[in-house]
Amino acid sequence: MGPRTVPHHGPVSPSCLIDCLTPVLSLMSFNPLARAYDAPFDPPRTVGDVLDLYWQDQLDKINGLGPRRISEIEAALVLAGLDIRATGAAGRAQPDEDTPVTLASSGAGDFVAPSPSTPAVNPGGGG
Image (tube, rainbow, N blue to C red; front, side, top):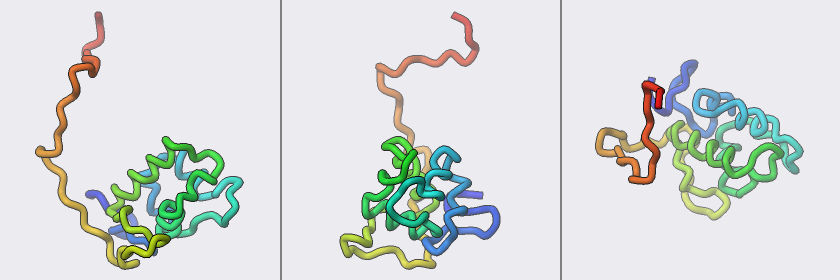
């Protein structure tokens, strides 16, 4: 099973229920998002609703979603195969509701070497 695929039905599209994001989103982010804790709007029911909240910069209005969790949601939407660059609020073209966006394949060319300041990891432990 690759990106954009959910075990129970296949590719993720904006019309999918929000539960389709559970394979790519931690419960620490999913639960506040799905329940919209203390938000001035109803909880999102679909992936498209989440995209709309993202495009309208409304995710930070949900109690429990700070910059780190919002970044995780952003990454989950990309991993699910959705184009987060399109913005409904600004009037740019949105992806077709039932057609998932194809991502470029990632491969060995995507590897980025660690910087010299990255601490070494000793998998064997010890000192």
